[in-house]
Amino acid sequence: MTGSQIKESAAYLQQKLSFAPEIGLVLGSGLGPLANEVENAVRIPYGDIPYFRTSTAPDHAGQFVCGILSGKRVLCMQGRLHGYEGYAPDEIAYPVYVMKQLGVRALVLTNASGGINTGFAVGDFMLITDHINMTGKSPLTGPNDDALGTRFPDMTFAYAPALCTAAREAASVCGVQLHEGVYCGVNGPQFETPAEIRAFRALGADAVGMSTVFEVIAAAHCGLQTAAVAMITNMAAGVLMQPLSGAEVNEIAARRGADFRRLITALVERI
Ligand code: HPA
Image (spheres, helix red, strand yellow):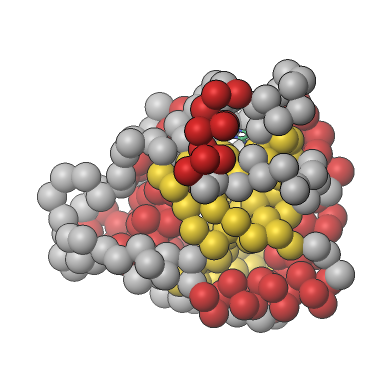
């Protein structure tokens, strides 16, 4: 991943768009339908963009949907890349740098997560206020491009306090309950063992998922303000002593999708 590749990818997108996007959205598992609410939508498949990798995960369309949401010019990633698909951390983070290059000033990430906090229930939403990266990997491994960001980026405010405030306001206006907590990022694709979940809980995690942390690290690196909201699509392994399935994740995401879309739309309005 080089600065000139990022510029080339951004130039391709720019030439397809009639506006400069201000907010980037990454739509996680089962959350893609939010992109259908974008007005005057222009769709750009990842596969058409120079140097882009494409989504292979189920229900990840693998395209940008660009247009207007809540009166804001947005660039939605309908589908993201995951480590379990075989992508390297810097490949997963690449679109974040491209969005920054395009002039995006804030990033809203969404995902489907397993609930570790026993105070949560399936279908709840959680504002991610911090994370624990359990993947053992970083998108910043290797030589640093100082033009993109500093060698040792600060992660203290990686989940931007002002955007967290905006998310709380959005939830209250929508009448949607929004928990807050720490997200634990893992590689997958297997779900965790009950012992792993007990360990993550002891470490301070409230939810677990297979995405988000690389994108947030990249956003902190390149100085892009980020907010992230998780949908608790299942309780994590061992919490309810019943087997987990990917189908359950998608079913809950579909059932709670309307409230999730209202919440994210209200958040975008406040950015
Ligand atoms: N674990 C990891 N990733 C997930 C889960 C889970 O329980 N649910 C949705 N994504």
